[in-house]
Image 1 (cartoon, rainbow, N blue to C red):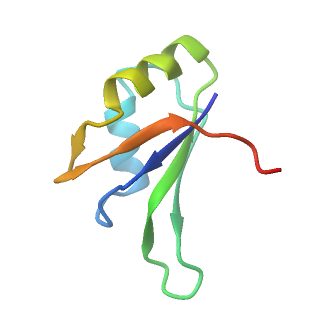
Image 2 (cartoon, rainbow, N blue to C red):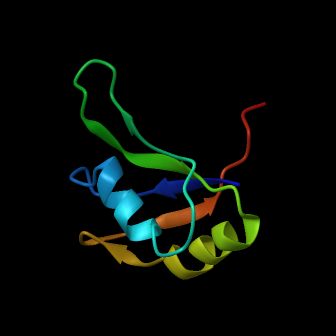
Length: 81
């Protein structure tokens, strides 16, 4: 399952997100979206987890949680149409 993480602090890095999610299960990929020109975080990213049950638990437990002083939005990412 591909999971969207929104409203992330601009200081959060991919390895920070991976460390938080490691206790939930296996992570296939973790990507914080960055501005092409400045290279700075845009405040959101995507995490891919092969086990849907573990991914659902991440969404249930982390959506609305506080991370680095911000309330994060965590939900299943829908593919672009």
